[in-house]
Length: 275
Image 1 (cartoon, one colour):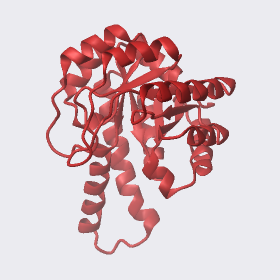
Image 2 (image 1 turned 90 degrees about the vertical axis):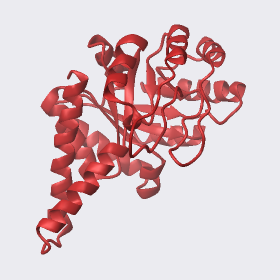
Image 3 (image 1 turned 135 degrees about the vertical axis):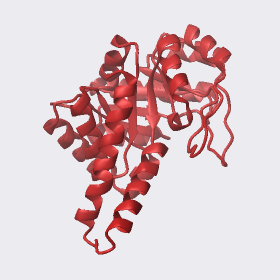
């Protein structure tokens, strides 16, 4: 089927009072795996090309690949630009056929974030695409620090810009490989009351499953970005395959092992979400 927008996917999640997964993609095999999981469960699949993916492969190829996978799929598929740090990056993604873009102006002064996001929204709307924004900074485990999302900033931002989803920082952190983070539930509640738009959690791999469910059911979080836990699964499967059969050498054969493991894990995750 044709690509769907992020708004469509999040509306489907809201209907279930659950959430969709923003699958952080790095290549053909993992994107295939996530779409296969969507077909197996009936869940919408948000294929996300972040800065790492775009450094690995040009944005127009990501667009072609995502559109092809959507066309061949029975599941709703979103082509999403993750962490576009400039208006120019977002426009390139729209030109490449993405159905959703995230402008990440979280490091900018609020007024500048509003101004650029509004411009991105206007361009996206003209092409029938969705826009995700971010307020507050989601840091990295053992890296850049987070800055909590301000409720006052949310109120000003939402009054000024008609976005489709808002990424927030409430204790979530990117690249958590062990353990889980502590969610600031008071902030989650206050932001949920201030923002009528679907909320997004980046660094979802570090959020415990009961917390994911609670954030969706009580606070309107409709998308969790998951990357780290799937990359860990990829690495485990690849190591197991090569240790089991040291004679493997063909990349096409080798890649089938982690692809199957990713599909299985993605199906399990989507079932846990209620799809």
